[in-house]
Length: 111
Image (cartoon, rainbow, N blue to C red; front, side, top):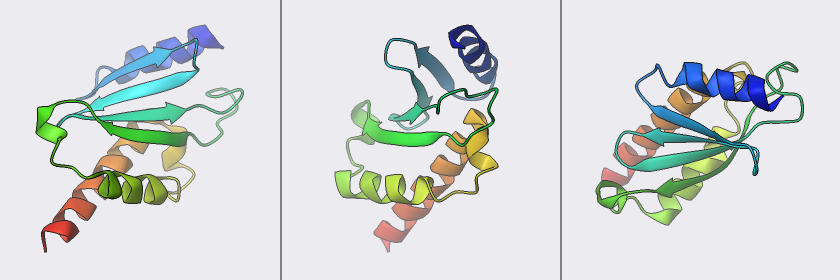
């Protein structure tokens, strides 16, 4: 299963983000533009089971993201796992959805 997950993550790296799979912790980490890292826990048997991925946490990873509050990241975490199950089966679609939620919440906080 580890080899398949590593291959999926390697293929996802061809998108506009950087992904890595940490086998020891069974985590997928997506490094988004703007300095936010997305920590995703694949369910047992994923990707063969086609079960939905679970967002573990979001973290600011560089100076550009330091302006993003912990409460904003918490709101995004809550909303992310309510995304459609089909979106949450693909790491690239899931991270795209998380990014959309983040941008939406940031715009709302500005107003």
